[in-house]
Length: 123
Image (cartoon, rainbow, N blue to C red):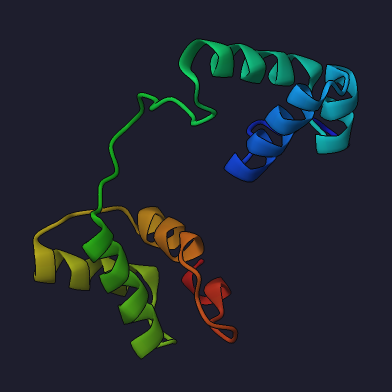
């Protein structure tokens, strides 16, 4: 199994509990399916900061707000045969936000949509 890039908060807490129980770091890494160095860095970060939370990272800001994301998913659910281009146009009219059609697809993919919504229609 290839190593995961990030451990979720539950797995980080579990790993830290195992470290405090005295389980070897390599065994913890094998149990969680991540690299040994990731567990080492997790332990070092906990000793330095007292937290297992991830640090905020820099990156490109999102082009849509949460409200606009909800609007996109609502449009997809109301008219299931609509296209990403149509949703993009409706969003531009409603909120004066110009985004790419791929952004519409990405937002729909990120949303937890009910079963039966076919995302293939947007591609």
